[in-house]
Structures are given as structure tokens and as C-alpha cells.
Image (cartoon, rainbow, N blue to C red; front, top):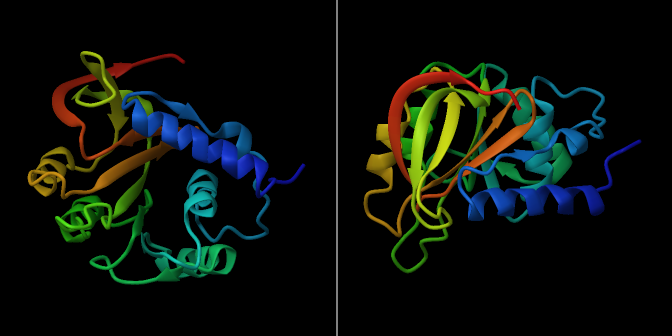
Length: 205
């Protein structure tokens, strides 16, 4: 069974919106990811490719951080008609797990954060991570959260302080979306305040 470009991608989009409006909510993209049939994914994880198919089109630009950045960029361009560009100009930045250490911090620092007149003209950074259901605990507060939520992120990157610095002049800032190897998605909009708990846990879904 193949991915339905209309029905299945609408389902993915709704899940993204749910996780963005309720930070801490994990959305499962495994059903849709299993339907992706690309002859040669050129090192691009299925879940990130699924997100790219949902969000990217010929009207936007992107930047890939990966050891296979050129091949992945070519594939995304062929499938979505979106154009690759620099970190500073990209609407979407995709940071894959095989990217050089420090790539996520670089993406956060250099990405566009919008303007006061157009704060929505900011980048969305999509990150492949080990897990969003186990690892270091992050405490979340802000819009869409009744009191406090916990998020579990297993990654080697140091990104929390870098994100905080980038988002300190709200409404300017960037939004993050983390997707793990089990196709679980965690969205962290710029309005979400994050405190690191520095306690590693395992959570069985």
C-alpha cells in the first residue's frame, strides 16, 4: 500500500498541529511512515522524508545538515520542488543524526528568526534524534500546557541554552520539531519554556 499524498499527508499535518498546540504531546507517525515507498532514500530517514513531503513545496526553501547532505537535498528537491539554500535563508532546516556534532546548535544560531512585522517568517528546525520517549528530562511550561509537562529527549547535542538565547526576543525566534527512530514526534514551539532536569529515564510506551 502506498502513501496517499492527500489523505495520509493531511493526517500527518493534523498530528503536527496537535503536538504544536499541546507541547509535550507525542504524535505517532509510524502508520504513515510505513507507507512511504521511495526507491532510494539516499540516507534520509523515512519520518523526516514524510515531514518534508507534508510541509515543503516550491514556495519554500530548506537546508540539510547531514554527512549525505547533497544526496538528501537532491531527493527532497525532486519530491517536493522546494529549493535548497543557506542556513540563514532557509524556511526549514533538517538536522539528521549523522550530521557533524554541533550542527543543531549551528542551525539554531544561524537560522532566521523572523521580524517584528513578520515573526512568522522564521525557520522551523526538524531534528532526527535517538528518542523522544526516553533520555534526559525537560520540563515544559507555556501556552498549551495546563501547568507543566515533561519531555524526554535522547540526543548528544547541547541545544537548550542555544534555543533559549535564540528565542529571548519573543515574538522572534525559531520552532523545533524532534522526530525519533520510532517515528515519534515532539514539537517545541518558541512559546514553550524549557528547563533541563538532567535526569535520564526510560519510559515504556
